[in-house]
Amino acid sequence: MFGVRILGRCSATSLRNFSTKTTQNFSKSSRQFPSRNCNRLFQTEAKTWRTWEGTTKAPGITAETAGRAALGGAALFGVGALCYYGLGLSNEVGAIDRAMVWPQVVRDRVRSTYTYFAGSLAVTAATAYGISQSRAIYTMMRASPWLVVGGGMLATIGSSILCMSLPYAPGLNAKHLAWAGHSALIGTLIAPMMLLGGPLVLRAAAVTGGVVGALSLTAACAPDGKFLTWGGPLAIGLGGVCMACLGTLFLPATSVVGAGLQSVVTYGGLVIFGGFMLYDTQKIIRTAETYPVYAERPFDPINASIGIYMDTINIFIRILTIMASSNSRRRK
Image (cartoon, rainbow, N blue to C red; front, side, top):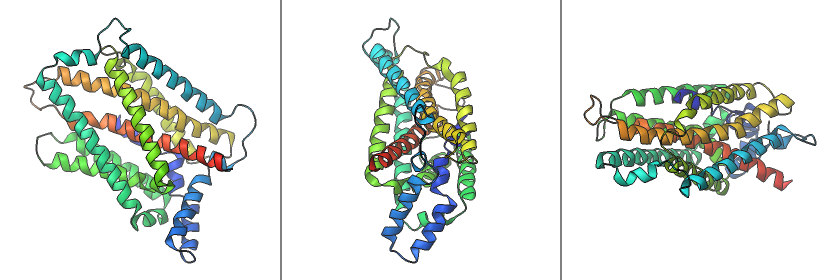
């Protein structure tokens, strides 16, 4: 499942960041302009090539407007659920109410899981920023897009499998090194998006934090297991998003089908991974409460945190894509 979620990040946005057209223009400009102008050129190309805003949109209802409408409906549903469960209107007891009587072992498990979750985000952010400020970003831009995107996906899936297969033990060990390496690899793959501009990335990160916080609070306030039944439908929806991701690699955004697939990847993916955040949050709580204390293998907070970590990365990428498209339209 985590491998499929990683594949869900392989959209046309990722390919645009490593596109051959962009790298060719960069190579020509690097001999004529200073590096600052090259960065500006890359930002312009990344925002316009094979994107909706780079084409003439047909009047009426389009794939983008339909995607925005679906996302707005999902947001209204989420706000309603947060108000309903947060105000205690449900007759069932939520996890946030049971937390008052949790034994110390359950508190420690939940705390350590979210500690590793925050650590993963910190390692990813530091890696992405460091690479975006170095010459390594230009090497990635010049490389073949299929090599970078395809190789990056395979490396990410392999690192996640390696990290989850190693047994957990406190202290610095192979498990922690694999966890840090996986987080750093994700940061490497999203580093080109930092060239869209620091203020835009910071706003997207702030919005992502608000969305993730609201979804986590909703899952904590909801009755126990309310969202755990969503696993099957979410997996089917994720499969559709992955198929749309593959389609965007071969169809231009100027076509009707290409625009529709891109809308599914961006807006549909945001809805799907928001649902996964609800599911994974309640899964963490359920596992922390029911995992045996004297099991052969101790409770693994790193494995428990990978789900919400990948959900957050996917939500951030899609919010950043939407905000970049909105900024491009306002400038016209």
